[in-house]
Length: 413
Image 1 (cartoon, rainbow, N blue to C red):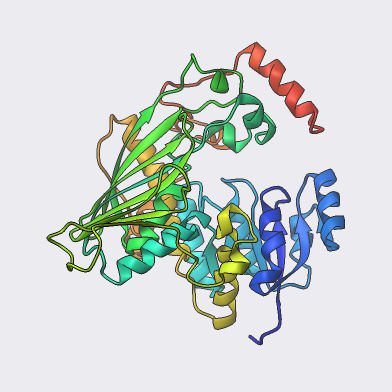
Image 2: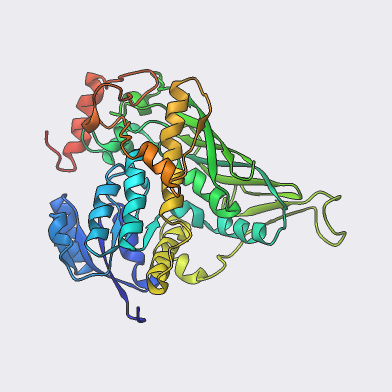
């Protein structure tokens, strides 16, 4: 491909606006938007001066090179496959897939079409995670032994309702383990390791917490996932709606420790090396604020602390070079199915569950028809409920409050 800007269309005018705003800095040109929310779509189209579509099939007839999917969590695979079959490269938000069967389908579609696929997991690109990747690759902390990663994101009920409009919006029913890639991706990115086994435990729905009882969510509070990685390391992932907003990463090696700070400036990094592991001239501990290793000025002008720039940038670079990005379909699917298998583990009391590797034909064949999911659209015999407590239903008071919040956004039943 030449140095001309890559023409890109974005699906989803809520979360997708961050991708739209940072497209130009990454060498892409926004040419089209697609969403079924017509008022928001019209507003976004006028802001960016681009063509808009409410019909995805018509959107795919637009003259462009690539599609960015920022639509619903559980709907990425059918949109991605259709786009790749139509000849477009695809970058998809998390999760990469909603079921194991979809994971197989997505991997096969990328291989069949030869299109570039990038998993848009922005948390891997936070400045401290990029610095830890650099240090790890230099061997500063030695062999990876243990890691911790957290994505804890509480909100009041009104905020939850405002971004989960409708009774069966995905945010209302995905189990506590499912939204796991924000915590898992940084560890995989830093250490280049791969989850091979998981077990999980869930903090149940809290009937004494108004942020839950006054919302319409039917899932649990939080989840802890333990993972065994392919090099033997152990990782603990914590994510959910516990009090105390936190995004952090901690990596223990056999020659040192590095972690993002939990207080003050949380973009800062702590590097610790014991006296018996270091040279005399090297400090035992260093705490500092790193720069992005490249494109620091461009990145700091974009969302999520600059991380949104790098998803666009690496997607564009992959298209230009014809080489799949680091966060390719295999890694995207692998970390996404961890959340699904972790829920199976939690429902069985935390038993270990092996994670299949969809780079292997034998593993694909085992799971190509697996549609196990709490998605209400797939409800039926053998399908799980969103909570380990069973079928939680919002109270009449919560329903009334939801209708009020949703009504302000133009929603009607």
